[in-house]
Length: 78
Image (cartoon, rainbow, N blue to C red; front, side):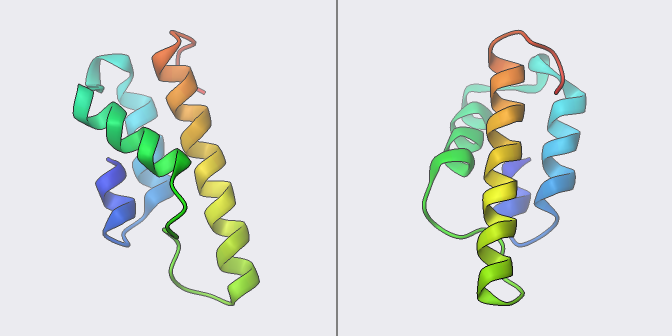
């Protein structure tokens, strides 16, 4: 799931898949990794112009925060 983002695959699709799988798919490790993805400073998006990378990274973090909140507060899929 979030490992996809860490390995420069398609992080947006990984978050969508995790969201679609629902709360039952969240192990403690996945919650920890999703939280780290949503909150860490390290860049995930690696390709593009500097400003584009920053904006894409912020969008990814926002999506990760949305998915994390929906799955951990019982709000269902975002």
